[in-house]
Length: 223
Image (cartoon, rainbow, N blue to C red; front, top):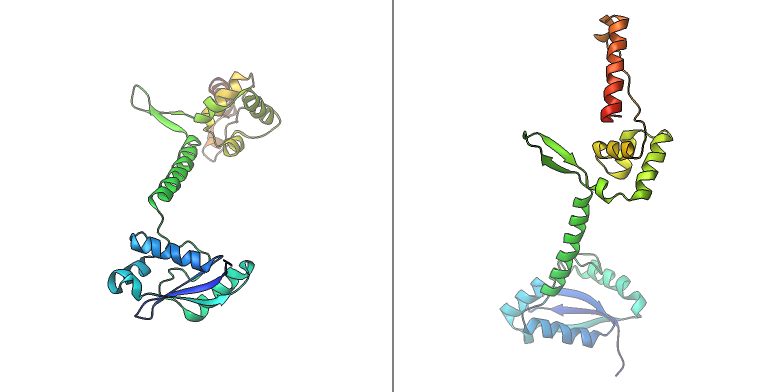
């Protein structure tokens, strides 16, 4: 039996239509009927028409025979001209409005759950210390192997800023500081910003505060 590919229409007694395309039109019709008998059809409009009028009242007709490579083009033309009510989306080949099977839904759900868990791995975990204050634990610190740790250290020594590295590796700055210190890198200190209020300080006081800032930076790894 020769297969015929082309564009077809399913028409209800009300005149409402569904337009589709298939490599084998007769095989597609059989599949439509199979799903409609079991009330598992992917198109809600067609399924409601069957419940209202009965399956045998639907008309299955061929609109156009064409090469498989031209199916989407001619299906789009038919949709644009006929404006079928049962096509939830006016774009040929779109899955919008398709009702998936339970098995397909499970696969989609598993994929999205895997994507969500992967994104969660990239986020810092915030824990509570004994006094109730938040303390950060970054998953990057536990995942970073020796090669990544050495790469981070090399980039920092080469002049990359800590904030730039945080953005690049999606890591908390505390975790990166701990990695750098563990690799023997001396953390760069940031001097005291001379604000208008700081200009009122004596040079000795400014020097003392800058020395304190540098000492804190080196011990805690602030920058």
